[in-house]
Image (tube, rainbow, N blue to C red; front, side, top):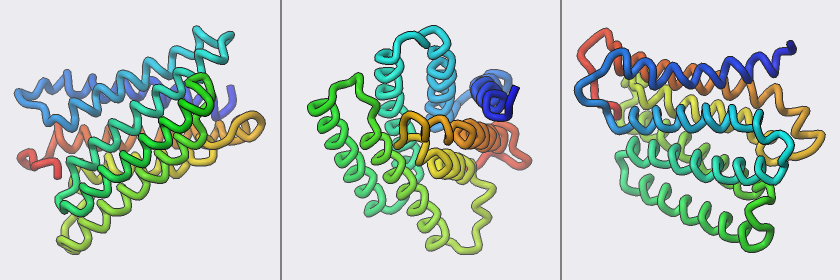
Length: 214
């Protein structure tokens, strides 16, 4: 087995560590961010496993990819909207979501749902990367001396940034180029999951009393 398929399998099943860690700890009150993260992990795991059953249906695979792009953008955007403190940055998240919705409607009208959404996926990646960079900027501007690596939000943000930056060309290409970028996709996906797990560990098993996520 080559590196890419092995990384894909490990990254897929590593998603289950997120809800499992929360279930093991069974905190009285789970932060909504981690509830959302658990939902994302479960849905992403199911989506990873479905292609094995619909391999003969390329149309079904495209519909699944289209739907998951919308779901993933929505989840990541909700993270950043919760993390941001400055109203100007929150407004950019709302404006970016309008841009995403416009590209979504355009693709549905022009190509239909069975068309692989390169424009839609590329727009989502660029917007979420911009949210990530703005959040780092907000943290550095508000308190340059703050140890942001102790924030669970830092690891979630870093996970989104690594995953989307590494997968940008994978999301916007098809055919031969898609296959060439598959290894990078698998590895980036694995790193994303490990960073998300780190956020869970910091929050659920803290060395000091739990701190507010943002």
